[in-house]
Length: 328
Ligand SMILES: Cc1cc2nc3c(=O)[nH]c(=O)nc-3n(C[C@H](O)[C@H](O)[C@H](O)COP(=O)(O)OP(=O)(O)OC[C@H]3O[C@@H](n4cnc5c(N)ncnc54)[C@H](O)[C@@H]3O)c2cc1C
Image 1: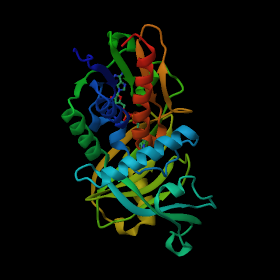
Image 2: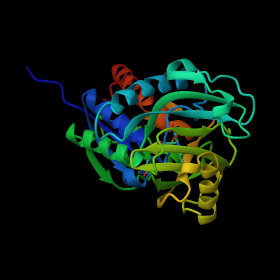
Image 3: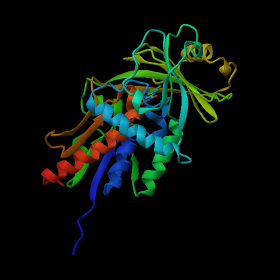
Image 4: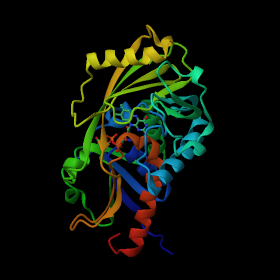
């Protein structure tokens, strides 16, 4: 009896969305190659803070489901050594009266913060524990996991989906902000984010200020020996170079709410371009001549919080599409 040929997939992009999609496709039996213009450590994903959830996931049924599935996966990863994921307690606070977040029942130990525990000028706050992710370390662990499952990574720029088309090949487009050019989607726009990384002077709890789309964000995210200080949300700004003045503003804002950071040694500056879109594009494409393509991009400021849920839906979409097509 002859066994069925392995299914093949090319995932374009090696940020958090590409890596999680590639791992889930490998787990589902696909032979996967990642093709990427930049290695994981040089992506927007590597610049992210990152914390699950407190950045809004856009609401709606699908993002809520993706975020829940991702939370569960990240909590499992936090129990393993070397993943760069930590389950950390902390506070999210707001300077205005703010209703309890929709995800409050999903996270561990959620409770309202007494006013005396909030920094001056803050009026509402919640205490809870969520995964905080040291992204460069986390992405490196995902690359190891992908490669040890037989996956390959090729570094090159993809000029168009049609040029990648091969018989029997599934294409998965996880290009983040790059989708604007690759598939001509002008609804994807950058929101520049800058972060300062400092040595951890002993911070054990996170602090996130809820500021919506305010260009001046404020968060303190400890992960082991370092702390990520944020940040910015500069819509429409394509500048990927760290700005020293912006960095000073970030350090001042964070030190004001977390005085223990005073004088902490700076070990790095990071900038990333969040791929903002009115809604995440996660769907099978029927572009003529491109074969079977699944788009998975446009996660804005919440890609780390939704990645595993989106990756699982990518596999479901692929298996359903293959079942109804003769292409693969
Ligand atoms: C400062 C900052 C803080 C953030 N904090 C959080 C947080 O706390 N929580 C959270 O959930 N999210 C956070 N985010 C958002 C999160 O980082 C993004 O949603 C996520 O990284 C998007 O991942 P991605 O894989 O789609 O894109 P990227 O990481 O940008 O990856 C895209 C990949 O596609 C490749 N590519 C693009 N075009 C091509 C092409 N033509 N050919 C080949 N390869 C191509 C790139 O090289 C790259 O490998 C933050 C973002 C920033 C910048």
